[in-house]
Image 1: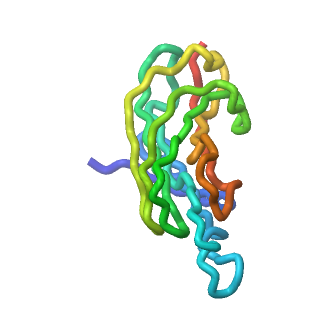
Image 2: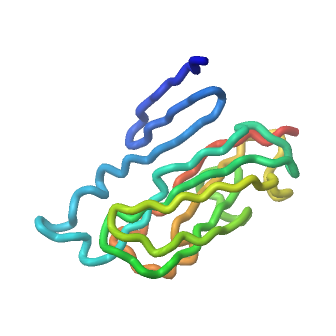
Length: 161
């Protein structure tokens, strides 16, 4: 069976649609460039969220969705695990409704940790409009990183009235 697949590049985002599932991958091209020639991220880790997918992309409060994400480290090794926080809100900056959390293990440079779970849409989601699921790597801010401003990725989900 063949599925129609569409890929669109928007700035640094590659959006891939396949059989009703939206997948957003952040390329973070700027993360591959050291701060100073020959510098390796000042010996600090740099966590990003390069993969985030939700299915289905339309759901009701209290109903289940499959949510998957990854946390990657583009710089120096880290041996400490961190907490990844998952929020839902009506815009990508809304971090007021904490949905769930999960641990990401310490990661070597260039390594990725994957997480996936079936979870219920929380009652703090807003029905009848598009909400955004926002994933924040090192959501507790416990890890000193090379870049602290690239830890978040968001994806839309419509919440039925």
